[in-house]
Length: 166
Image (cartoon, rainbow, N blue to C red; front, side):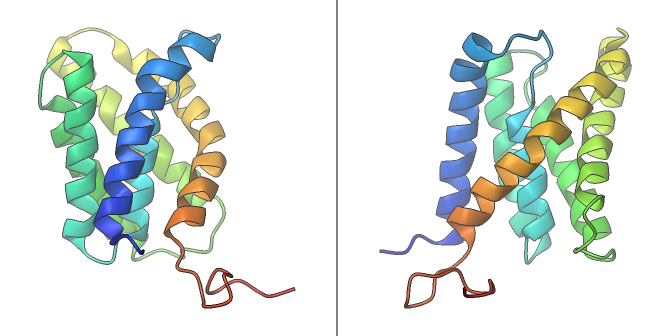
């Protein structure tokens, strides 16, 4: 039974929220943790076929993050939706095969998030941006490979379409 793309995205967003709120606080030794929901929302926006296909999952991921965060409800939802729309627009004009572009997009989204948080809360959260952006970039290849594994359609032989056969 094949799941539609939006159901796969919903499952990934819920799993990322569960890992981010339950597993990472127990296992991660640093005070600054990766933002799995932000990474996943940007990955979905990078691979979206339409603008709505990138914005709606990002909005849902942001609202889910707001639900667990209790600060400024709706703030992360709005910011992730805005970031996803920017990423969708930028990513579809640039070379998708460039290895470094995804890292710059994650840094851009993290920076945008913390600049808005600094302006709204009037506290210097901007200093947390660069360490979190670096940690997000460390988690990007792992989360991207898991995302691609589950969202790449399979051929009848059980191999991923678009990959070379050995």
